[in-house]
Amino acid sequence: MAVQPAAIQTICFKAHYLRAKRILDLTFTLLIAPLILLMGLLVAVCIKLDSKGPVFFRQKRIGQHGVEFEMLKFRSMYVNANQNLHQEKIVKYMRGERLSEENEAMAYKASNDPRITRVGRFIRKTSLDEIPQFWNVLRGQMALVGPRPPLPYEVEMYTRKEWARLSGRPGLTGTWQVHGRSRVTFQDMVEMDLAVVAAKVIRHSG
Image 1 (cartoon, rainbow, N blue to C red):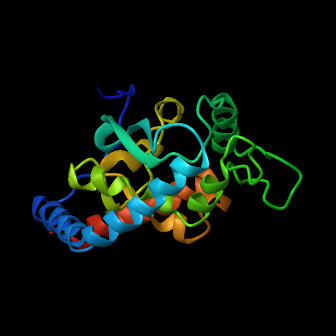
Image 2: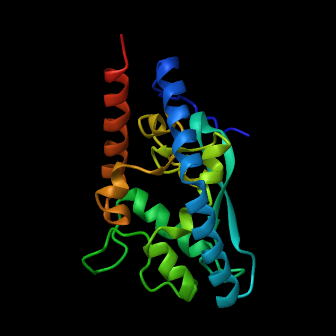
């Protein structure tokens, strides 16, 4: 399933660049596979001991060219947690609205969210909840580096310019995560992602 806007702005990459990037993603992932499996097993055990429910959290995300896929994460919330709160915060975040009167007003991830388990707080803070996404990388749905994959309702709000974020595979990490993660405004995140995409096109053009 793919999300199709009225007008799409996309950026094209050279075929040899895409092949090289894919080979690099696969090689790195396979090299660290033993470490991933060990860390993943430890996290899974902690999750099962901490709260009832499945180890994995599966969520529909939008990938390259608007194609929907199922992204994996380690579960960090209690089962049947209300997702409406997160959607409301995401919408405000995209609109640039203040979420609170604190210094971290632009953060869309609540620091004291009661829906998050004890283990969930730790694996979110350390990004260990992202480990299962290496499976998405192996399947070709994600890359190691790239824009974070948005939720379907986020893409419904995208402008033509913002759609360019979906020109390549979404990534486990990217520029905006390094420069502040959820403390970065939505527009700053878009600009960072597009700057990286533009640099790749220039570097591999000709």
